[in-house]
View: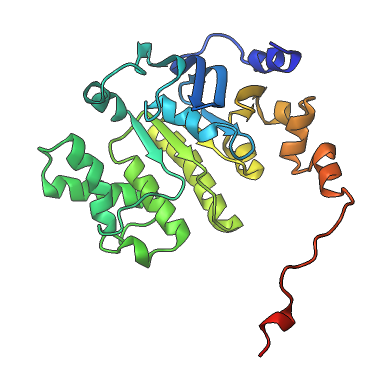
Length: 287
């Protein structure tokens, strides 16, 4: 393990903590492509852990392992000290009720109304709940995200920010212990992004949940994160609070958080060479 990973593992944690999710020596390959490389990580109860890193570094793949939507090529995954990566889909059914998952694009069912989307997980896991009880849950969850009154709307009639908020209401329909957010602010303007950030903080407080947020939005990461972890090339290279990440000595961390292109990449972009002639010119299309 190199010096940066040694430092990342230290993480600045103080004293004993209660672990909700843990991955041990997690490795994931898709064919010959190594996506996660011997990652070990413990998620602390009641905190918001933010996972940052460039596109394709394994952020979403990592959190999908937390609920066994992906299975490791090697290593182990635990929820509350129970190993889950080898459980059958049937045995995972109860485990997954402890989680809410906000997918990157919301993943609402277009053919279902807002109310029916939020009722969906309730029907899947609690078939004996009455329609009236489900409607009360829908109303309460929509009120949490500021959208009570939108029950009969369909996703096509909502803005991007509203769809994310409905998806978040659905994610908390079963009162989960853990909420996993996959790029929650992607595609939103700064104001709508900040609404989502405020909801992450609100739900952490109101529901006393543990949150894991995957993002490349550093403004969001700094606002909601109690702890920020950076993945690069499938490995953890930084782990700490916002101040520790801002001052982290690893050059890749600094390039990412400041949105700077590396010198190597700049050199490639600025390379001089032969510029190929266009195969077609505008006059080639003139009559």
